[in-house]
Structure formats: structure tokens, C-alpha cells
Image 1 (cartoon, rainbow, N blue to C red):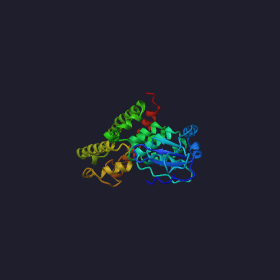
Image 2 (cartoon, helix red, strand yellow; image 1 turned 60 degrees about the vertical axis):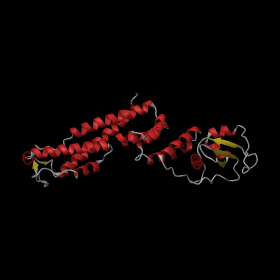
Image 3 (cartoon, helix red, strand yellow; image 1 turned 135 degrees about the vertical axis):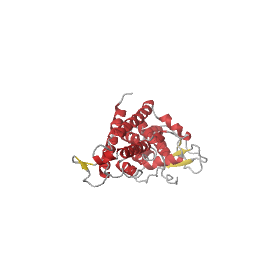
Image 4 (cartoon, rainbow, N blue to C red; image 1 turned 90 degrees about the horizontal axis):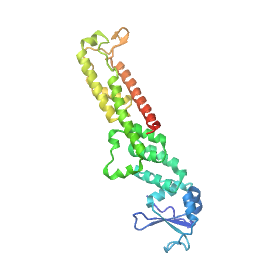
Length: 298
């Protein structure tokens, strides 16, 4: 990332970013613009600042030391200055640092932009998105993150355990409650779904044993899929059928295979209909539990 943008001669104050950097990096900026964006900077500029001591600085140009690293300050400034192309936010850690800086300096005008960036990381890092969203008041993004959470996504690698310092006990308990209830309710929905009914017609009844085995295999694979991906959609459930052998020998795919006007359940289109119903039921469970999680007064 180039850090040579904020070097204009007409800047009337220098922000010096120095966290872990040698040498430090100076940003020559304008009090007026930063005062409009941040009441914290506005109050800061009201106090006398020491003039620059560096030979590269113009005489009497005040300098303010900033604790944020240069790339964070550069991105914040690009978001604040009108007509300046913002920097790409590479990862959730950087986004978290930007949110922290925006909160520290009360630069609320850039929250919507950071919120849009938050959504782009939802599929890749829902746990950290949930933490950031809860911390900075992005309710809808927090709900979307819950929906995408998998058991593996709730386990932080050792290097990132510091993220947990920024989540409240209530938000952490809300997450744990949702994951536990979703697993319990999802399993019950899959086990209770009538995917096959081997007693529907005489042909299926004759192959009851094979039909039962097919049902057990289908139910087992659906449970495994749900555990790995609780956000599974209809297309994901359909792909499970490709992992199974054909329905019991003798079951026809012709629509004439009916019993009292009901299509044979082992007819593939009937199974697809049942899976579509199951996918909608699982999504409804997610929606209900998410709303319940945020309505509860723990």
C-alpha cells in the first residue's frame, strides 16, 4: 500500500503514526476536514500542539502522535477525505482495527462503508464478523453471521484468541445457545421428515427392507450435511442423492406407479419434493431461532 498520498504542502497539521514502525510515518492533513469528520480530532486540535522538529516539516506545523499503525490511519483518512479512492480492506483483522479506530475518534460517517465491507467477509469468517457486528451495533450482520456459523467456525486459532476480548458475555452466550438449539432442532426435523413411506404401494411394500435401508442412508447423509453446513439449501440436499445407490430394485420412475392416486415415494421427483420441503423447514428453524436469540433477555 502506498502511503505517500497525504503529503500536500497546504496541510496545516501532521498526524504521526508510529505503532511498531521505524521510521515513523507522517501524514500532512487538514484540520478543517478532520474536524468535520471527528469531534475527537476537533477537540484535540483545540489544544496547542508542539511544532514539527523534523527538517522536512514546515516551521510551526503542529504534530500529533497517533497510536494506530500507518496503514490503518491511511485507510481512515482515505475514507474521510472527499473524492479520494478508499483502500481495499484485505481481511477481517484489518476491518476490526478500522472499526476500533473509527470508534475511538468517533468517525461515525464511515460506519456504513465499513458495514458493507463487513458483509463481504461473512462467508469466510462468520465468527469474527459476529464479534465485530455485535460490538459495533450491526444487528442484521450479526444475525447473518449466526446463520452461517458451523461448529468449526466457532473455534479460534491460538493466534486470534484476542478477538474474544471484544465480545460480551451475553453475545457469546447467545451464540452458544443458538448453535446448540439449531443442532438439536435440525436433527429432530431431519429425523421426523417422512422422506420415504415404503407402505405407500404394494411394490414398495414388497421391497420394504431395501426401502428402509435407502431411507436410513438418506437420513444419515442429510444429518452429516446439516452438521457440516447448517446453511444447506435445497441444491445441497439434492446433491446428497448422488451419493446414494438407486432406490430399491423394482421401484419405477413412471408416474403410473401410484397407490390411491399418490405417487410412489421412491419415485425420484417425489423425493426431491420432500427434500425441498425439508430445506424450507430447516431455513425456517434458523430464522426462528435467530430472532429468538436476539429477543431473549439472558
